[in-house]
Length: 420
Ligand code: EPZ
Image (spheres, helix red, strand yellow):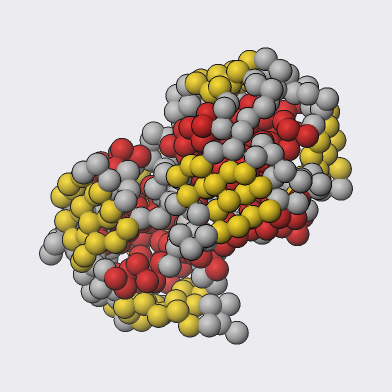
C-alpha cells in the first residue's frame, strides 16, 4: 500500500485549481442509467471512487468513453444486467446510488447491501423504505436488496433523518415514477441540487432541490445531455485548512465560495483573512497561528461532517482549547488516535473531541482509516516537525485528485512511495 512522506514546517503559498465534486459526480453518473441516450459528464475528478462507479456501470452493459479532457460519455442503451455485485459495492458504498435509477427505468434491481465502514454502520433503511412507499416490492436476502416494481408511483416521503444519498436515490427513483413525489426533510447539500439540475437538463421535472422539500413530477422518459459537475467544496475546505495550519496564503480557483459558508465563518473565527470572487477563494494566515474554534457537525448548510477531521487537525496546533462535536456519524474520530501519536493534546468525551493546541506536532508514522481522517493526517503532517509517514493512502486517493501534486504546487514537500 502506497504511503505519503510529508516533511512539515513550510508555509503553503500560491494558487491551485479545485477539481469537480466527488459527491456530485457519483450520483450524476448513476443518474445516467435513467436514459438510453448518451450522456456526457464533464469536470469529473479522476478518483478511485469514480473509476469504481464507471466499472459498475460497465458491468451492467454501459459503454463508457473518456476523452483527453476527461469528459465521460456514458451510453446506457444496452443495460443487460441490473445488478450491483458485492465485489464492487463493498469497495464503494455510494454504489447504492444505482438502485433508484435502475428500479425507475427497468422496474428491477439487485444491489448488494453496502455494509458498514470505518465511520459507522451506515444503514440504508431509509432508501429501502422510500422505494417501498413508491410501490416497490423489496426483499433483503443473502446480503442483497432485491427490488421489483411494475412502475413506481409517486409518494409523499418524510425522511426520519436527513440522508444525502437517500435523498438522491429517491429523487432519481421518482423521475420516471407515475405521478408526483414529495421528499420532506430532504438533504440540502449542494451536490443534491447539482444532481437535480443535471436530471432537469435530461428532462426531469424537479423543484425545491436545496430546500428541505423537493417535488418531483414523474415523466415518461428523459433524454441525453451534457453536464458539468460543480466544484468540490470539501477539497476546497481541506486546502484552506492546510494554508491556515501552516500560516500561509493561498488562492483556490475554479471553486464555488457560496457552498462552504459555514467553513469560511469558522476559518475567520480562527483568525484567517478570507477574500472571495465568483469562482475563487483566497485565505491569508501569513505569519499567524490559528486560534482554536468550536465545531458542531450537522447537515448542510451547517458545518459539514466531511470537514471535521481537518478541523481536529487545525485545533491540535491552534492557540487555546477547541471542541469538535460529531453529530452525523457514530465513529468518526479515528484520526484523533493518530493525532495523539503526533503529540496532540486531544481527548474524546462521547461525541466530542476536546483539544488544547500545542505549538508544534511531531512527525510520526500514522495510518489512514477513512477518507477524511486521512486528509486530516496529511494536514497534521504539513504542520508537524519532521517527516510524517501516512500509510494506507488509498483512502486519500478515493476523494482527493493528485493531493501531493496540488500541495507541492503550494510549496509542501510530499513524496508518494509505493508500499509493499
Ligand atoms: C454522504 O454519505 C456523503 N457521501 C458522505 O461523504 C457524507 O459524509 C455524508 O453524506 C453526510 O454529509 C456521498 O455523498 C457519496 P447520509 P451518506 O445518508 O449519504 C444515517 C465523504 O467523505 N442513515 O447523509 O451515506 C447514517 O448512518 C463521504 O465524501 C440512516 O440511518 O450519508 C448517518 O448517521 C463520507 N439510514 C446519517 O444518516 C439511511 O438509510 C447521515 O448519513 C441513511 C442514512
